[in-house]
Every structure is written in structure tokens, then in C-alpha cells.
Length: 150
Image (cartoon, rainbow, N blue to C red; front, side, top):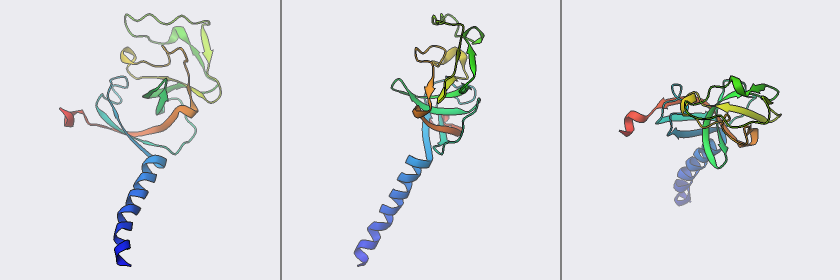
């Protein structure tokens, strides 16, 4: 009977860790400077998968057009975004838009990187909103990790 007890302990630990990292926590690496100075390139991020109502200023991880991204929520459902009031990267022509503004629909968010000069975000996308279904987690902390990699 004791032969089967020892393998159960590592299996139980693995199961608990699996549940924690697939249902509660997210750990990731930020390779770009799009969120600097808040989250420097090369940082390790920790997020919670326990969802709550998001507000302007929250930093989220989401999948958009096949890429995993980290951005700050700039507008929530019902907010109006005026295209001319946004900052665009130097030398980059803003995309042509059908109207002067857009209202964020229910279940969606308008997101921006903190580094406006080096962020591919809602300002430039054809589909400008991030659906709440694309959200993976809300960032709770970041650790500057780049000095360990050099």
C-alpha cells in the first residue's frame, strides 16, 4: 500500500500548481518597450485571472489578432474616444477613420500602451477594440527582469 502513497504526493502538488496557474495566476514576460516606463522591456509580470469589473487605468494581458499583448485600458464601455485627441508616434500617419470619434461598445475596451512612441495599440488597429472575451488577466505586479538576462 505504501508504494502508491509516495507518487501521489508529487502528483497532487503538480495538480495544485496546474490549477493555480491556469485558473488564478498568470506569469509572463514583456519583451517590448510599449508599456515603458511603467513596465520596462524585459520585465516579468504577474496577473490575476480572477476577473472583476475593469476600469480606466487597469493594465491587462489579452490576445488580439493572434498576438498576446499587455496594454492599459484607456476607455471602457460607453466612453467616447476622439481620434484627434490621441497622441501618435512621430512620423507615423494616423489611419483614416470614418468618423471623428468612436464610442466603446458593451463588452469591449479601448487600450493604449504607456509608451505612445513605441506601441501598436487601438490607435492603429483596424478592429480598434479588445473584447472582454480576449482578456487573459489583470496585471497586479511587474518585476524588472532584464538585468538577469544580460
